[in-house]
Image (cartoon, rainbow, N blue to C red):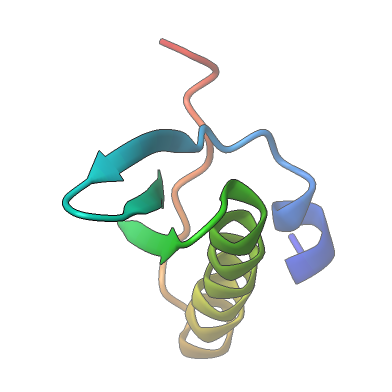
Length: 71
């Protein structure tokens, strides 16, 4: 599969609101975590991180886990 094909897969993104004096949003997909001041900021960062991780794995020939379909 190509990077574009992997990016179209429905990976689950966990969203958590942190509260420690100010509000942060933490998003997690696979083994990646992104934190932002808004959900939109965190989502943009997690998508960038996901693309970089997949591309690096493709370049290295490393296996890329696919979404489990909610199982």
